[in-house]
Length: 229
Image (cartoon, rainbow, N blue to C red; front, side):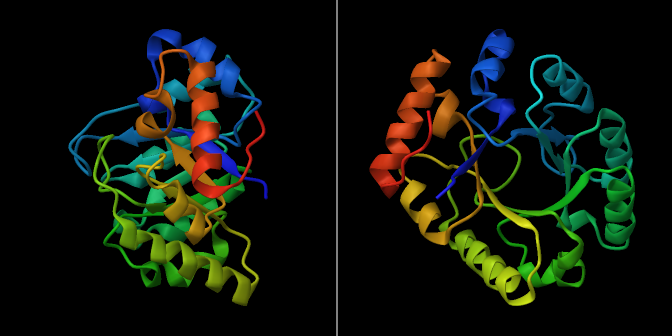
């Protein structure tokens, strides 16, 4: 089993930006960048400018998660920054989803959508076959350290069944409180990509190598699956 991880850079130690990204680059599938406008969620975080800084350190793919009121504006900005994946919120996509997906694909990039814990899969059924990735939030969005919403894992199973039945190509990603306590339950739902943040990686130790090794150990201890170090 090839387990894919995507570290959430909003939870990293920015004082050690270059060191941490350089160390993780050949170990992870992508880097996850949260972009919040302070309106869709009550927080402000990273920006498309941050992607330019990441590009100076690594060629590992970047996946941007928009938590914004006007995703169409930010899609244009992320195309300029060449974010490999641009993932917009399903809750703000009504009337613009196809336009955003087509624009992202026309730029040679990959389009994704994000479902908050209370948003059902059927809300994106009409354009699922056009997506490259679906991200399932397993916490309320906006802040690190929110309570794990275990029931959201059912949507991962549902999306996998839909993908298999229809031969769709999207990846399934989970985002929220992925750590030693939840790894087993997440693993049972079987997403393609685990987003790991403060509780799963960056908060385990100040030294990124020690933290990564601890995460690998925790994952194996919970799931029995070995992760390449």
